Each structure stands twice: as C-alpha cells, then as structure tokens.
Image (cartoon, rainbow over all chains, first blue to last red):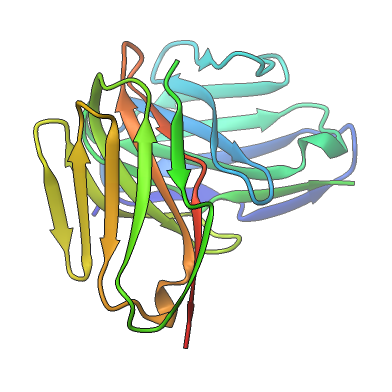
Length: 115
Length: 112
C-alpha cells in the first residue's frame, strides 16, 4: 500500500516556541492531505484539509494563525504549531489519499509535548 | 454535520471468541467507510475499506459490512487473539468537502 511518512515522531519543546511537523507521501502524489489531532483516550479530530498549491481549509474552532499549514508540493505538507503552549500538547497525525474516494493512508503520528 | 458513533466504547473478551463492533453515522451520503486499528501511541493501520456501493469486505479473520441507508456498519472479528487488542476506529468519508470523519472508537482487549 501507499506510504505516508511523518516526522518527527515525537517532540518536546518549551512554551512559546514553534514546531514544524512534516508529512510526505513517499510513493504517490497527494493533492489533498488531512491533519488530525488526538487527545489521550479520544478519537481523531480533523483540524484542516490541506490542498496542494492553495490555502488550507480549517475546521471550526481551529486557529489558522496558530496552526500554519503549507502544501507546497504534491508529496509534502507541513503543519507548524506557532507559539506552542502546554494545551497544544497532543498527538498530531496526517493522512493522504491517492484519489478522491480512495483509501486514506496515515502517517505514524507526532507526539507533541509542550513544557 | 456528520456524526459517527461506535458501540461499545470498550470490550473485553477471552481469546478465541468471535466479536462484533458497531459503527453508526448520521448522514448516509457517504463515499466510503473505513475501519482502522490503532495501537497505543501509534498511528493508524487501515483494515478494510467499503465503498458506498458495496455491502461488505473481508480480509482474513475480519469482515466489515455496510448498510448505508440505515447508517450502520459492523466489524466482525473471528477467533479473536490477544494480538487483536487495540482501539478500533471507523471513519466515513463523504459530503461536499470529502472529509474523513472518525468515530469515537472501541477499545478491545482480548484476554489470553
């Protein structure tokens, strides 16, 4: 199956710093990627839909200025958590699909801990 | 707004037992439904994908069914094993934005 690579796997940072998470589709081109976050013992909540070459579409309640998404190429999308605070600590995971109605493949996730 | 619910929230069974996980969704206008497995602290593993025109999909000991009109899907696991212990998530994709919306998850524990 298709492979989605996500880095880093985990990151610890100080409050106020920015953290960038990368999501790459290794063997296919993804015009659309999705970013999710997951709090402990909860399900995945969609944060935003990332479209190659255009602005991301954010879900209600997600601050677009805090969670910057860039999808500059068909194989790479990045999520930058700006001025991170402890409440941003969470598991972030990206996904991509080959086509519109095809199976979604997920990265391995990034555990962010903000001190 | 699409809402996806999974029942039960948690399930503990002895090894060898057959079991059924349930998923229901409020908006039947979906493209497909996907079942995933998530191990603690890890990403997602796709188990089965059912397109809206399909009724079921099978992979090994797993069988997923879809009744789109009633907004329900089930994941049947035969002869459960301790290695099946994980959280199982269903997700539906559809609507104008083609988003994948996840259910609340079922935490499965298979006792040896």
